[in-house]
Amino acid sequence: QHTDVAALVASGDVNLAYLFVGGLDVPPVALDLYLGTLNVPNWANGVVSRMMTAVDTVLAEGPEGMIVAGLPDMALTPG
Image 1 (spheres, one colour):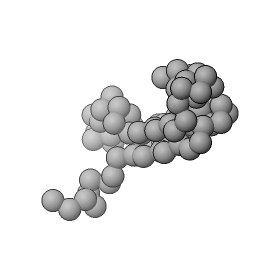
Image 2 (cartoon, rainbow, N blue to C red; image 1 turned 90 degrees about the vertical axis):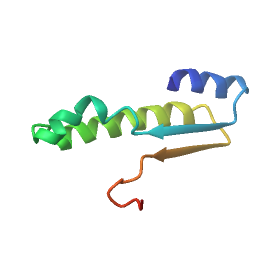
Image 3 (cartoon, rainbow, N blue to C red; image 1 turned 180 degrees about the horizontal axis):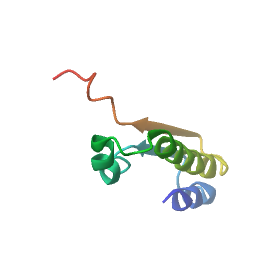
């Protein structure tokens, strides 16, 4: 996906990129997280590494801007 966006930026068809992080990272590991069997530091490092790859790939093509957003901490979200 990030390479497709980078190609759009490079071609001039896109000048602002948006990356939403977190929606698909937690469900595959939710049970292990709940059971306490997930190596959280390793998992988090993998998520961050993939994020940085996506951001670096897109930014290398020179968009005017890039927004990176993520899921809020639901324990701190009212309601």
